[in-house]
Amino acid sequence: MESYGELLKKTREAKNGDLDIIAHEISIEKRYLIGLEEEDDSALPGSAYLKGFLRNYAIYLELDPEYVLKLYHNKELQESGVPEGLYEPIHTTRNILPILLPIALLVCIIGIISGLLIVKKYKVTEDNVLLSGSKRSNVFELSDKKFFQRVYKGDQFLVPSDNNNPIVVTVSSTLGTFGLAMPSGTYYVELSEESELDVDGDNVSDMIVYVSDISKTDEARGAEVSVLLRHGALAQASGMSDSDMAEIESVVDVNLKKIQRTLIEDNRAYPFTINASFRDSCLFRDRVDNANSVEGYFAKGDVFTATPHNRIRLWISNSNAVKFSVIANSRSYDLDMGAAGQVQVEDIKWIKDTDGKYKLVVIELD
Image 1: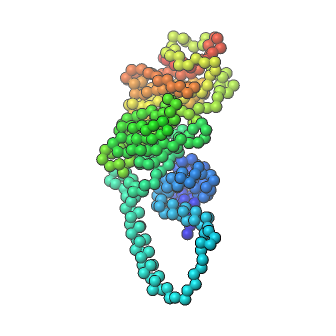
Image 2 (image 1 turned 90 degrees about the vertical axis):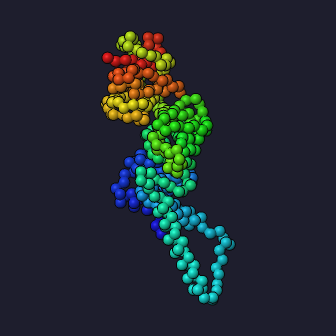
């Protein structure tokens, strides 16, 4: 019998699948996918997560997840061996053919029935929503990339933390409202609602959740959600380099009349995170530090996040369509950019005052 790792790798290569792309699409780190294909348990975070990753990867490759998990369990049994004294050979001269024939027939019947049940269990409804009769949960490892997928009750998100031990967030409800259970409590998000959630109970928003589809009558349909981490271990950079500090403008070079708001005043400057959640459609352009400008069309429910070291320039075709917040030094600041239909161009950046202190300011540009 082939091994589960060989099956995964062979199937991926037959589909010309790229590990980097797959890792992004199913929210599992590339190193874990490699660990699954190489059957390297030491590269994975634990048995419970391994099985969840294995199930998700198998479904993505259009393999039967139950069969792949069976291969995994067979490998476990082979490696564990039979305890000494448990097995004793039985010697008999009795003709066992009459006994084996009914047993073989029974095994064939059970195999046929099991195959039919597996096909039925993973059927797709008319609106292409995958229904799974399995009670085993999927595990999704969140990263700095936006997560968008249908999830089911019992599924889990792994949220990175500062101590390298991921925080487990569990889907507790997919009927009517979307529920998430986490260390800070259980939160509920309504259909077409966007909520900012505090995962670890430090009174700072850690993730943005938006529910785009959920059933009021059928929990098994799950919920289609998008999730974006706001800050924390992933969003915070280690600090400012000498070149970053050298690029901070002096207050004497800034038109003070254009400063709309001073968010922070501190003895040092440090990276900050800006989050944008879109309440309506608009064109949006950003330029982070010295990078090139990036422009895109964002729709209702989309989210954007960036972590500048020094500054960011924002261009919005409809100011009222976007809700902004800035996170720096573990504090969050909400921003109001302008009125509905107003085109807005803003700089959010550090400047250095004449007394040597640093200020994070919002500046309106013409």
